[in-house]
Image (cartoon, rainbow, N blue to C red; front, side, top):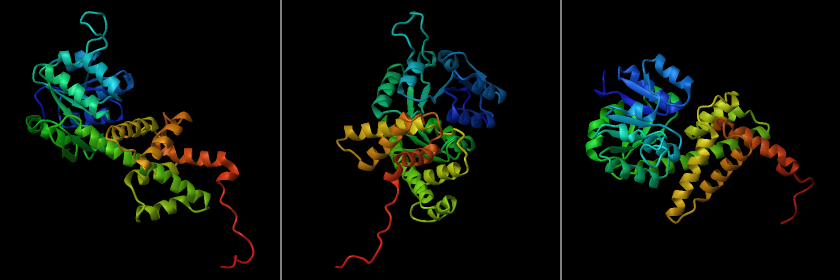
Length: 323
């Protein structure tokens, strides 16, 4: 099955980008990739993808370019280049190499204002923009069950819907306004940060109370405290599985972006601010490169460091006071 007549180009083949690229290769779609991680490029090449040496090279002749880098600064660099003037010796961006009418799909979680800014620059160059942040993790991206929150004009939706549906079983078209995909993703990720921080505290508390943490998690998963991110991350943490799927850095970044977006709207989410502060503290403690399931370890370490201040007060002895 070929979804597009020209190769689909990917810039950024980390956990999510590589999973999407390989899923398209499984469908017989021609794929090009560009990344600074040569091991990732080798894995993509083994699956039949063509590895390009630069953003401009990977984009040449492609009708769809998927950007799956980390943040807005990287997005701007790969799309529009490092140089301010043509011919200044620095690397050109991918946008200038795309054919007229091509589409750029923005998958990083970035600020809505950055999405709008990039979309305007692309439109000025005669290129379409799909605002399409992802959710679900690399396993779901690989098997096509992840979520895509899409904001784009109706003609772009109609043109690329078959490919989008192949990538994401949970596909949401949120309307035409650039940045609404980002807004929706940031609202979601702020709640994910709250849920994960809360789950880490709850399981750490269960351990502190001498409960079987795995059994407690099993109860939570069938009760009102359940959340997908809490269940998935805490199950892995209790199994000692900290293989990086989603680095702590990412949810720290996303919660900070969400809180900035909220501030622009004139509000300060109290739980969101507390969760965001926990993730920033975990970064300061060196947890950034670790999988965010390690928040359980971070909470436990904080309590251990607090010593007796974190210990429950002993029950009072003697008869209860009158009254």
